[in-house]
Length: 334
Image (cartoon, rainbow, N blue to C red; front, side, top):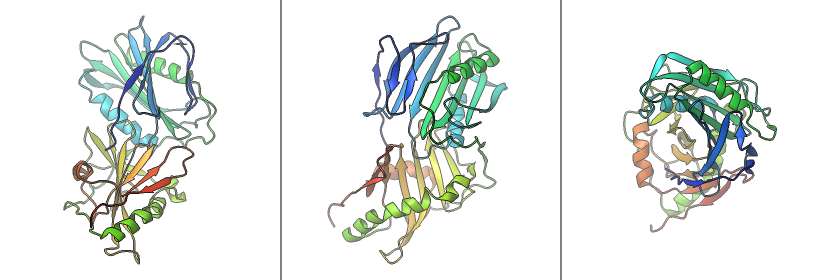
C-alpha cells in the first residue's frame, strides 16, 4: 500500500493557497483562525489546513486530496465509519445524528456533498462531524469537533465554514450524492487467490496490456451509472464496495484518505496463457500500481497480504494532466 508522510508548515498571516486545487484559505474564516498546513505527500496532492475557534473550543480541519475513485458516496461512508468509531473522541450518541446532502460552493454540483454530525458521550468533546464533496476530481473533507457546541450548533457551524471555502469555479459539477446501502448478499470468495505465472516475455506483455484493461474497467459511460453498495465483509479499517453488486470485481477503500485497491476481471485472450484472471491495482489518485494477475477474485482480507508480498508490474501517473502515463516494470530473473 502506498505510504504517506506528514510534514507540518506553520503559516504567516494572509491567505494560503493550494495551487494544485486552487483552494484558498484566509487567515480568518468567520470566528475561526487558520493554523498550520500539514502535507501528507512530497508534492502536495494530499494536504490539510487546521482551523480553531477558541471561544467555542471548536477545532476543524480542511483536507484536500486525490483518489483513484473520487466517489463521494464511498468516501463519505468511510469518513462516517472512521469518525463514529474514533475512541479518542468518545462514544457517539446515535440518537443525536444529523446527516444529509448539501450543495457545496464554487459550482461543485447541486446536492453533491454529504455530511454527518453526531453528539458525543464523553468527558471531552460534545459533538463531532464530517463533510465531504468532489470539486473537479479533488476530494474536500472537513472534520470538526467541539467541546461546547450541540450537534445542531456544530452542523450550522460546519455548513458556514464550507460556504466560505474559496476555490475557482468547478469546470465539471459533480452529480448529486447517492447514499451507499448494504449489498443484498455478501461477495462469494471461497478460496485465496494465487498468481498466474508467466515467463519474462509474458509478464512484459501483460504489463503492457493492463492499460487497455484499466480503460475497460474505468472511464466508460456505464461507470457514471453504476450503483455502489457496501459489502458485509467491510470493517472499521476498510470498506468493501461493489458496483451493481458485481460478483467479478470490488473496490476496497482503506481508512478515509483516498487510498483504494480494486480487483477486477480481465481477459488477455490471444496474448498469453492463462489468458483469464483478475487484475489487482492500488491508487491514491496520484499513482496507480497494477500487480501480477491473479487466478481468481481475491478475498478482501487477502488484499493486504498480497500487497505486502508482491511488486507492481506496471504503474500509471494519474495526476491531472498526466493522461495516464504508464511505466512497465521489467521483471528480474527468469
